[in-house]
Image (cartoon, rainbow, N blue to C red; front, side):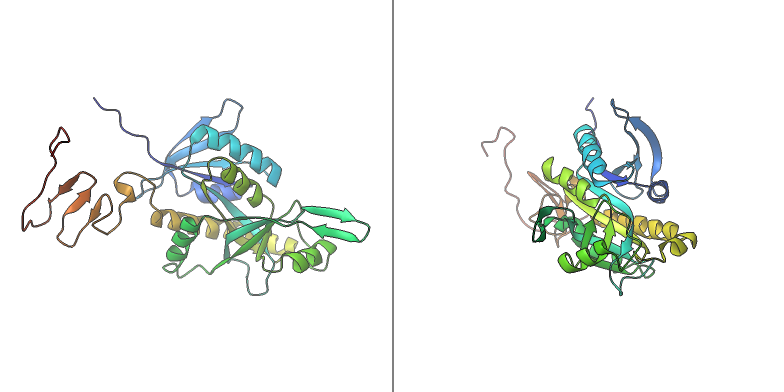
Length: 291
């Protein structure tokens, strides 16, 4: 009896309990798994997709995210890594409740301090093109979500003062960043260094990174932002197909598993005409490979 192939896995990482809960609500048939070093994930099925989703709550900070993401990648061998949660807005037109999808992620603390001042040495990693495209497609059908595809800044700081020195520093050196958070660069770096996996950061906006942050948080904005980020993540995964097998098929005849205009399914070395109509000869290949 043949052993079924394991389902493809996407690793979804969060920092906070409310972020974790927002993603967890979409995952069915969950079971908890424990890494030998103690890191825990819940793994289950994303309905109506081929994806197994492994969720982990890592805690706060980019260095912690990088180390634990590496650990989980080596253990679970996912096809994609996502960091999902909340962030502060850096732009007037990115409102509380909006979602920011990171086209790239900046690590804002890299540089050199000299007598003349701090010289920035920018570090940036792009988000996965394939995942970004799936997200762009998904949000077109989401009437209740306003999404922005812009860079995200990662810093070891909770920004609650738009007039602070660090706020002015970001505006001066990373002025295209649309949001600030604390873990994204660590997760993307781990994905890049461990097999160049598809990776993306998706953040719901919970505050404007200003002195009104506490008021916004008290209004329930974090919960709403986490739910919005999770909804975009799930919609994106419903668009993005895992690599390999029939789930990777597209609608062109020349692709393995694709369906042609004649209704036939083309799958590597064979053509399946079930559900289609055959008109004409077929040139086949002998089983021993000599035909």
